[in-house]
Length: 141
Image 1 (cartoon, rainbow, N blue to C red):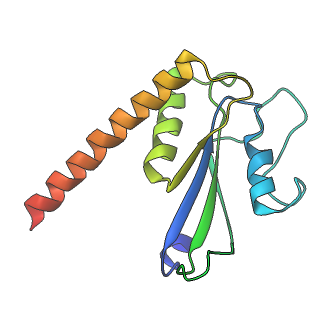
Image 2: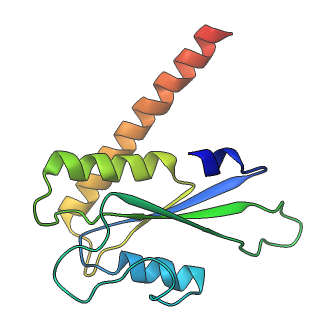
Image 3: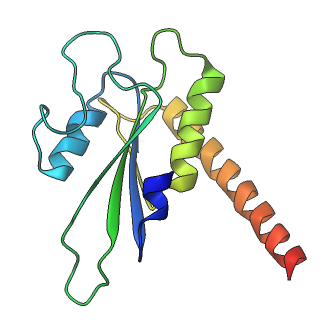
């Protein structure tokens, strides 16, 4: 939190969510342009490597004329991991969706009906959240 307070100017959060062991950390390392020995930890075993939510920031080029922005990459614990509950997965998924400028839903195969249902749930949650934020802001004016 202390580090976040030091940031000035626009901030963009790029989050990735998806099933455990589906390549989320690897994909983020590719976006960062760093190897797996430098960036987010990538495992070669069945056990989950990422626990909770991890952040990484790197200077990124911006389109000509666009203001410089701090890009923060957000790696999340995989959905349906061993020992995790559905409620825990929903919280990680929702948190990532609510804080993100860009949300990547990484699936290792074809998108299934359950994937669409999860995304729909998060859209409903985000809509309700921002609706309530707007009501609080209006009440404070």
